[in-house]
Image (cartoon, rainbow, N blue to C red; front, top):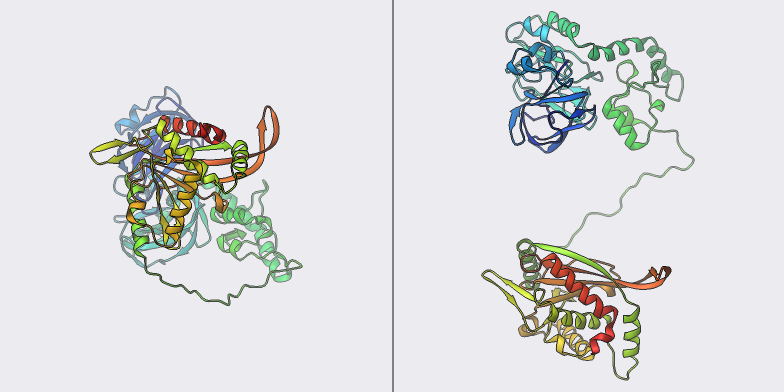
Length: 539
């Protein structure tokens, strides 16, 4: 028989849903647990899984369309099955007898499980059923009733707190009237769409409505109740055990080994790694509920940790933002949110660079750093890739023929970027001397505006702080910035053999408006040649 799948209530406040995407199409085979669609609710976009098996025969709501909760979403059945009666409205009865009942237009999600009872409902009486408060919820447990029989209920009032498999959630009434009947007491559980309560005019006799609802429910929804009725035979002995022994009595278990536990309690126990058979349930017929898991205390261990008592107090100091800090915040925020950044990461072999630096520094009165080698290599590579040495302006893109490399320097108040001008024309010792001079001025706040302007590319090096890899924000109007990590000694493969090697990771942040991915990659290939073979920079 074809099964009508209605728009589910995926949140406690959801009244309608929008199909964001169908993950199955008409004609596809559906297994229980398959994700049918992604549905946008008032809170999030959630996956909706099928509780039935068969073939997807009809899609009632297309992608982007919106419909009320419990309106027709899809139809699942046997391949080739005639569903014209369901689509024309003549198949309401068969739809209501299936796992996903079709609701009436006046009382969505609250009278769907009582087709026989609804016909005999006294005027103004509304049957409230167990809601589906999460996409995976199959049954719920009443944690607390916030209204009692005889109370006046207004639309929007919280009727009860319901434990689902994910959380304890408030369930509000969508009708006004008097609470005439409570179908589930605190601690009791029932399947989704089972009788939860009845609301109507004060003084209305609804005893027949409750009885008819139970009698006409689907057999699959009565099975748990029948199973629960068998449990009380063993429950009294189990319940009395705690009074006679210090250890809790075992939780009632059915013949097939099932432990009576609410979905939320079961999930909570799994998260805490607690064996449910060790917990004494306090719910109906010894059922384990959330509070039982939360209050469970295992047997005391030989050494237990004492309760932590903090001796300090919360404290803080407010520091006014300096003008430098404000300027940094403004410039980097503008860059991050206006320039479409992307990142290219590489790892270079540094064996030759280490040997080269050692030889170079053996010359009297000569001292260069790895950062100097990187700055020189970047300058030479930029001459071959002018697109990376470019600048973006609102009305044009400027390809620079000169190379001015900005070097990020950390100072107590923040960060400054002094500029090494015409870096491609300078020797390594000259670059080293220029960087040291500019860094000293930066720390002493002696830099002039001219010494911090005009860069066409930026290098930021945190390797001296032990940072392996990081990404930087582009220093606009530059089109790229290179982030340099430290040199790490580690196993590497050379000529098919694992040997000890030294590598350095670098990350290039590019502005996609001026530098495409392939262009940035080609620049890094050229840079690799210079850094892994620094002697080529002397030619």
